[in-house]
Amino acid sequence: MTTIRDFDEKCPVCEKTSPQQVMMSTSTWGYPDLDLRPAEMKRSSMFAWLNECPHCGYISGNFENEPCITKDFLKSEKYLTCDGIEFSSKLSAKFFKAYLIANEEKDTQKCFFNLLHCAWTCDDAGDSNAVKIRKMALDHFDYLEYGDGEKKDYLAMKADILRRSGQFDRLTSEFSDVVIGEEPYDTIIGFQIQKAIERDTGCYTVGDAIGK
Ligand SMILES: [Zn+2]
Image 1 (cartoon, rainbow, N blue to C red):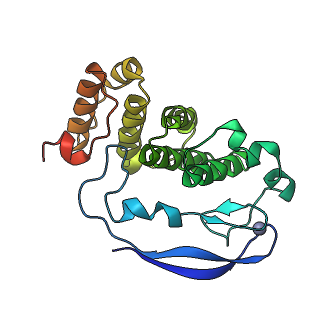
Image 2 (image 1 turned 45 degrees about the vertical axis):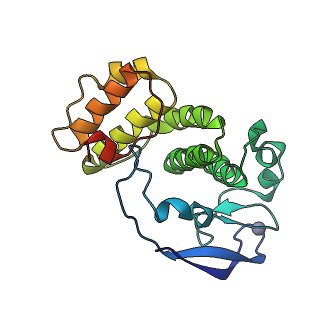
């Protein structure tokens, strides 16, 4: 189960205090999606993944981290309007704004994951911006830093982002010769290529790919 508590947190930008929902614990039961989106209960806890200051609009996964952005950026047209993107859900806007801050701070890792999480919330809201946001996430992919042991997870995410954003030919050309040498990863990549050939942008779990 997921345990959420309310805490008064001090915003590191405007230094005002506000109540924030903090996830104390969560759990997952079942296979993740092919882009490693966790199963329930963690899946439905995204509303508590980011703090948002009601005073200045700053958004962060952790208010204890030192921000590198200014109050002026938080008042900018770009930030206030999500750079002109009209999202169906407030949660999508929250993750997109966290991406805008990460982009301003030149934090590639946070850019990628905030966009991926934004795409997940678009999926949940039936928002067609999910395709655009996945393409934006891919723009950051080549600059991500990860260890050798994590590469297989990042490749799995990339294959799914390509397929879910309709980039079928790019997926097949980039992944046809990829051999990770570890299951279930090679089965997953084979599944992705098959679904790309079928022009299928649907959401599938690891369980679907391995036939369970
Ligand atoms: Zn603030």
